[in-house]
Image: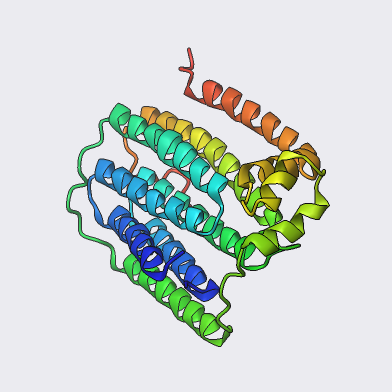
Length: 105
Length: 187
């Protein structure tokens, strides 16, 4: 049987991979995908806590509600973010973070 | 969830995550995200969160990743050229991640290993008392089944009714915002 620690370890590792991608990659779409990975890693630990800390013999559904809301907000965020990326590409013809420096002081 | 299945899907998920960062072609990265999310959905199902597992597949791999692929192909992105990586961000990235993993392992090593409480006939039947007798939830619980979707719906439409409606407004605002953002300005 997998313990709570196993789930939290796997979730933390997925979060670390997403964080590494956000810091290392220069392609803004891949950076965005890594953000999704980090959100999903948080979801995994929420569902694990919901299963391992039952209320009245049932999994704690408050945790799964939070996951439901996170997934919905993430979907809205992806739609808006990708629209911004398309607008950015129209204006600059690039999506490399290295070349987007007009806000740099 | 048996241990070997847990590790199988955990490794699938983590390998997908590493592949997202490692691949140069954005389309390959997007397909790796799909693989990663399939493993994650399997872990959700293993945690008896069937509804969350299904919407992970439907919303993320079904809708969100198709949107990503659509944008990648719309912008017609080529493989990234090999450019000299700047040392500072790479070093900072690795240092950040290694510090995070060390802290994670340190915290988890001190935590007692708890196994999942059993969701067997006795535990489920004792939970049936809190719901309407003869209703779908109570009947399924008495029979020893976990009516996951019904329980989620019950919680969503009783305790979380207002947040649900705010979420509907948020989705509407996002839809309008996307239309406004992607319109060509005629100036």
